[in-house]
Length: 253
Image (tube, rainbow, N blue to C red):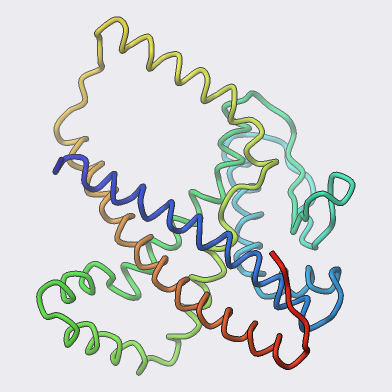
């Protein structure tokens, strides 16, 4: 169980992040609708609030395409309805079609870049691993001391806002995920072939150790991001309730 603990922790944090992202996405648009009274204006509100994360999302597509040698066109950053108004697109990058593997990597790029940014911010700005160790060893006193130190920093809220924007804009869209199916089927068939043949590639112990360390570091980061997003969600929900009382309108989800 110990060998699997980092991976299971990472998976649990990722699932929690998906759930809270979905809630924030719905209620952020709901707040925009209460503020403006217009569905279209609520899209612009959503876009403006998350703009730094949306910009990173689209630049990630562009950068991955360049690294893979794919031809790229213009980058569009503006909310528009696609698919006869069935879904909202906040931006796009023109990328030439390629093979399923490279198309999948381009689609996956925002998640990879987003996780990388969150990993750097949580560890090098907030020392999140030290925070969890303090909470385990020193209890609430250690956490409170850490929090007071953060609050004394002038750029504390800027970093919290960056975490909020990146974490809520880094998930691949439905269009980003379109090329994944053939790649996942191929990988599944390869794994099934290894399993049925009884042959498994030997992974050096050093590689396994490094993978566990990276998984644990990312689990710490995403766990911290979930906590930050939860605080933002509480603030968003409270603001939404206040708007409902002030306007006499209520959003049904």
